Image: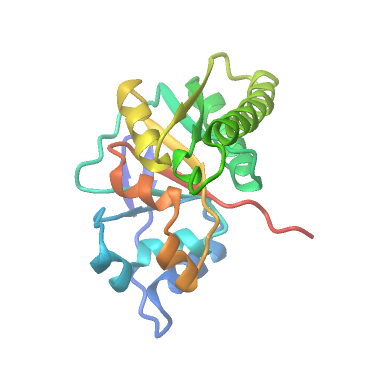
Length: 221
């Protein structure tokens, strides 16, 4: 066991024939772990998609929050500003719950952000009408999230709506507003659909200069 100030760390070396991520998840379950913290190299491109990583497998399958950081991640503790991207989905709802609990514990401000994905406006559709509809949906999602934060013990909340590629916009907002951590949901998609389409959460994890907390919604039923 390693001790440092008020932190106690228990060490373990596991030898298991199962895949590494399954061994980690089994350990977390057996020891009632609340979160998994793991590094990521932040790679991009075809090589990353083909090679995969233990981190990505944990992100897809973990039922508890996964915190990721890479070589260039800056950790400022205690967090003063926490960013939560919201889109009205169940995964975003779950992420907001985690963010509120964390913010209450350390008296941090919560920033709510909705990104209007301009890449969804394609073809011969009326771009203006589509963007207006997307913005309205974003405002509704922000209103609902703001109400949840205001009903908690969190004292500060900022709400913003921006346009652009989601992962780029989220990281740009975090950089411009001095955010210390990002908390967001992941859909946990697998297979060829995920490889081809990617995900906003994975894009943020690769690009973010601050720790990223990811969580999934509880399954129905």
